[in-house]
Length: 166
Image (cartoon, rainbow, N blue to C red):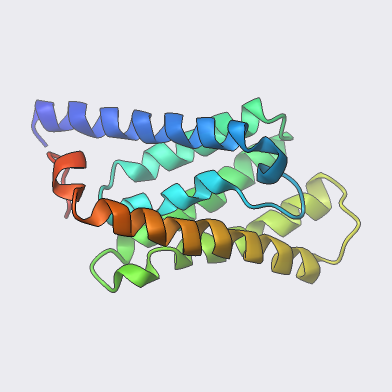
């Protein structure tokens, strides 16, 4: 990767991280807890357009969880769920664009309820929390994320130019 491409990659990752943090904090009442719709998770469709979104989303989630007062287990495992989702979205980028939200929905649905139960001591059945977190992820990633993806589709060559799309 040329030096200018590295700068573009880092800049895009930093901007994506910043947007993730801002959206999470602005919508904090909806971003945390056993029933959550984390609006910032809509950004998990961005690896469909650029690999810079992978570290951007991961770092953004870490920072948002730190500012949001999350416990260490949530900072670590919640961020790993977002990272796994971003990696999955990037891996599926050459398939149907409608598959882009599936990896973050699955990763968060499977990981976050365990953090809520064991980390925060939420006294609800894990399958129930999988349902509530899953519904929130479908709304944020599946609905809002696909709307975002559709809006960016025609401008991705301008917004995400100069990043490697292997």
